[in-house]
Image (tube, rainbow, N blue to C red; front, side, top):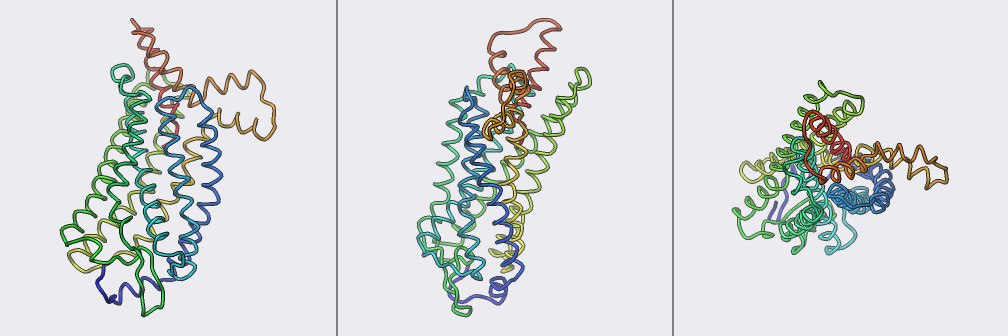
Length: 360
């Protein structure tokens, strides 16, 4: 944040060649993979019936990833032009709000999915009423409403800044102090973004996946099979990807905010570079989330004109991450189980619930 003149540290950051080279390269790579991957994922998700809470969350995540990827071409041109924004101040505000709204929406949606999975694996019978479609839809709409409200200060102000020393016009890389009324307002705005939209969701997501992994390991000892072992590995991968992609960038942003607000220190170059990790999650999602499903593979074969036998199709549906969710919800809604058979079926349902959400 700056008033009129820039310090040498900021000027050096704006001329940093590592940022000018790395970000366009990463954004281009992510866009090439993410856009077709998420378009195909969204197409498959929209054709899955019935629309369970899990599918609704994944549709929201796919839309979020796709919208975020649409911001990359503007960012690529911006950095290739040596941090010179050529699209006008209105588009700067729009792209910035889209970028951060969708990035935080991705985190919050993944948190909702982790909670939904945790309830399905650890409490498959007791809390099934909270895993309904209307609650998932309400959660998705609530996420978008809260984020747009919180990021309104970015949408309602000019985020461009003319750097006369370098003869460039930056977009969101240099913020003006008068964007918000006071120092307290700045501190409150930045800390709210960090705590509400990253730290709390991050803690909840990690706790949920640790609980899921622990429960699957406990039950695999008595009723172990290859599918459950696969579920455990996938849960671990999803947790590691989430932590790796989002933790470095957001914690460095927090350090940068504290440094700028209280000590006049900047860690912005490190923040910009670790932003690449958060964006990489955008193209990883389809592979660890959707294409792990055999039903996706089956539909893909149908799209490219390959015939799928009825037996293979039925087998794919039986092992599908989506039919697993459907069968689990339907069977759990049918009534209570008794005796040892009931325990066994309940454990199988727990596994089915997680396999319905292989991914994030």
